[in-house]
Length: 414
Image (tube, rainbow, N blue to C red; front, side):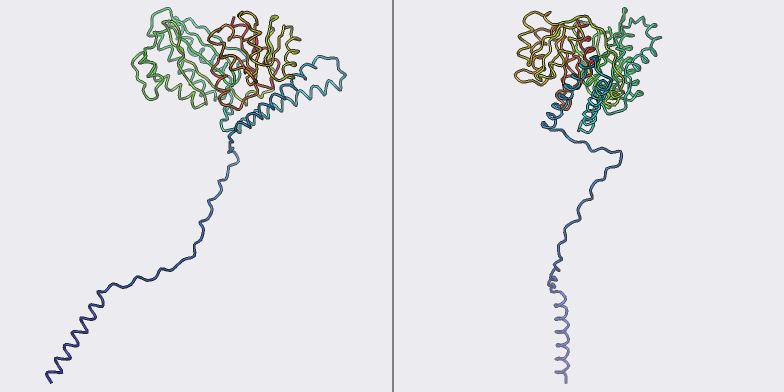
């Protein structure tokens, strides 16, 4: 009997141990369930709001097409201008007026096309820069009297509109003026201040020079380096930095211009001309010029001939060539050969820009007589050159009054 009890007890213990060992063995991992792969949903297409404009990048080919189109419009416009004043019956005279109007509308389309480009400079709210400049100077008139400042002002009445809100432009120019007045207050009499404004290419350039103490190298570095301004070293760094930020936010720039001599400092603000303000439909008053000798340089035969006939009708003596190499031969070695040189930019053999760059250092008096006429508005390098060269330019298709006024600008630089 005892044997059966012992046997049963051993069997029970063995079963218990076997059960426990079975619990300790690792269980095989379940076979993964293979799911059917589904492609991720496509990202939602961005939806443009009604006021949002998708800008495009103009490649070299597109810029060439726009330039060619503006050349053709300039030729048509020049020929239409030539017919004005001719004896025509009322029906043909009315058709001529309509033709001229259509040319201007086509020119507006090319300007609006530029607003859709990747760099829509000039599409901001337009502002009358001349009104703002004169207003800011009037606000500081009492300070001028207090310091005995002699003010020299050159602001053309026909200065183009700029693409900058009036409040922003007012604040920027006020900061610049206060920068100069701070320097003048710290200097000894006599005190002078000169403000010049001029339209050059697609920009309006405003320069402000004061006769204060020359800026040290350290002071210049503080002025042109972001976030490094203090109230020491001549003062005015805060005003300069704020004015620079306002100019940059409007698509322009602010810089110090190196000057010869030992006195003063000059600040130059460049702002984009307004594309919107240019479409006011108001004709620019044409100034009366004395008889001048003018060199016309354009590789487009129709444009060249139309400009020659228009300028000759105004009473000027005109010589026309089709590229820069021929123009250099005509200019010769004498600085007084021509009173004005009206040239296209893009030409075979030698273009207007290359011709100007060859002359500007060796014969600066001749370089000051250049007027650039171009339909190449899309290229950034063209806009940059016209902004920085300091010479007047006219955009194709041009208005005859704008061309005459640009020639008048260089004739006054003698």
